[in-house]
Image (cartoon, rainbow, N blue to C red):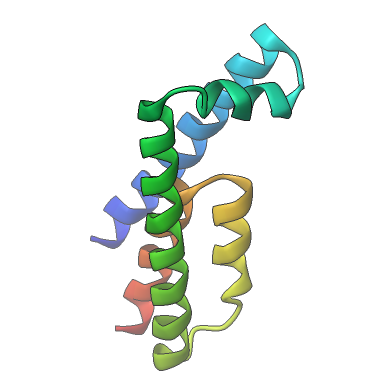
Length: 101
């Protein structure tokens, strides 16, 4: 499973930055416009709410699990979530968690 988690983390990183990179190349670096477009309809708002709650659940879980297992540097997963997204931070956490269990 460890190898699968690593592959998924790399895939999550690449896909997240490929999509945002393509958007920024086409529309420019105005992140305010990005969020305005993303939240302009109820479907986008649904995805945003779902992702926000999922990210919060992951952060609470990963913090508690990292403490329980004695995993250091929990802040890395917080930073990964904030800078890339859940598609990167969750499999990254699971990859390193495999070493402890």
